[in-house]
Image 1 (tube, rainbow, N blue to C red):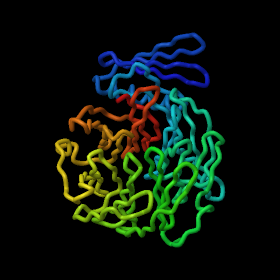
Image 2 (image 1 turned 180 degrees about the vertical axis):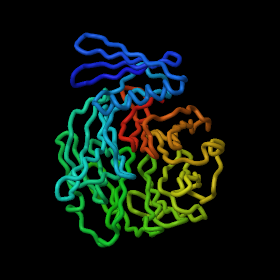
Image 3 (image 1 turned 90 degrees about the vertical axis):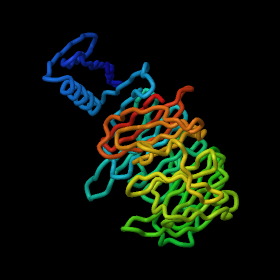
Image 4 (image 1 turned 135 degrees about the vertical axis):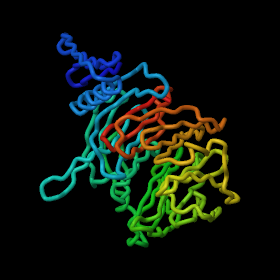
Length: 376
């Protein structure tokens, strides 16, 4: 049974499958109407149900499932399609801020938005972004850091005000048009125009300079902060990762190897870093201190590659996503804890672990235009 509700009008829609029969039950103004259709197979009936669900989401309905079991969707909200690679969102307590592609307006300019959702899927606010193309969004304490087409902005949810951090900082190298944002606990790091900065509270401090290597017209640049906020892993050159002290920019180690180009990295609890190769999605685990390649028990078979990955705030669980298949790994035991399918994915998605009212969810923003929560 799939239960959808139109939060603006209160209309409800219940969808279910009984054998080869698809059943749609709509409730409007206290009146119930039921429609049934029999298909040639169970598979066709299920496809029809999914199609009806998607059509309803696009009409403003929200799928809510408070009784979702582990691996099932607790929420589906239609946001709208994003640009390739621009599927940014960030959680802030019990709310979510999700990037929405607004499209072109007259004259060729883009109007993009930040959508504010509560845990029920209700849109609380739609705010016009000061620049289009939100590549990344991260929560940093009480504010959000947004990478808007390689300019870093600070967004205050309390006031809905944006601050362009590029206007408050003097840059030594304006030719480097790359960027990143990442955060852990009370420390955030961001980069633009060839310089890296840290943000603690309201204090911005310069950390280091960088120069991204260009391979096939795509710059090499990604970064991650350790869970204690003390170290930054920086990858801006093929086959090289630098580990920096986030207090003073000191280079703690430089790791080399034939691992190619990563487009995502993260710290694991044992002091290693996990990188995802840009083109093949191969996962590589490297010891930060020695530079030795590691082969943990879970990094095998279907978990040896991924299109997307994310790690929980306490570094206890890792999510690996291949197309529409999510796998949750318990890093303490090294076991594959959970495997389930994601809905409404065309080619890719962005995912993050979120904790709401004491429960753990995997939040997912898909390129088909959906924002979802899966109970994990």
